[in-house]
Image 1 (cartoon, rainbow, N blue to C red):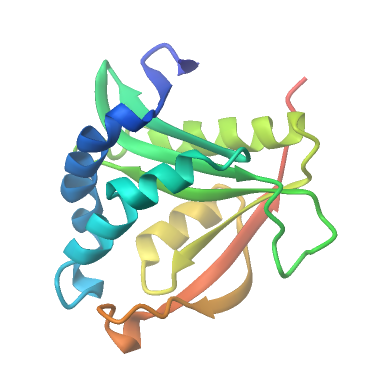
Image 2: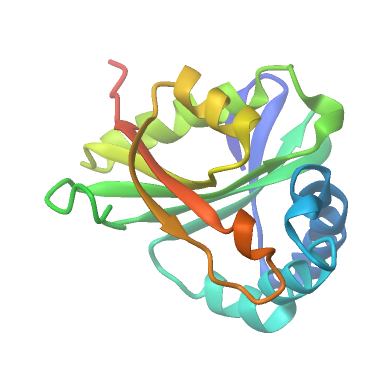
Length: 182
């Protein structure tokens, strides 16, 4: 357990948590992303959070994979990848904010900001100078949130998955400096 604030903790996910993770993502992911997919994202969720892929992701020694728990209720996930270079800044030691998904029911409570602040501080403690992420370029609310947290766009890419509508495959790579609080 990692305490972020009095009512916000991270609980590391283990293999036995897969059914809970899969149920959570079938609830949380479509809230923001179902319009991108021909099948509302069902295949993507079942593949990414299914047991086979989940086991592989848990084996990555540079990964921190957690449930986000707010007021004793699981409301999302956070997955960080340490030592994950950003192609646009290859000489900067980096942490990738690989996944952050929070239930819309707790939106506006400062959870995302608290997680970003904690992530940048953790990255700095690890000796990383930047934190970066990828965001779908059509997700204006998410991009605006990340920009408000100090992220800047460094480049573009595409997510080439068959069930993703072709005109909605664009992604931004975004980054910010890791900040150590003394």
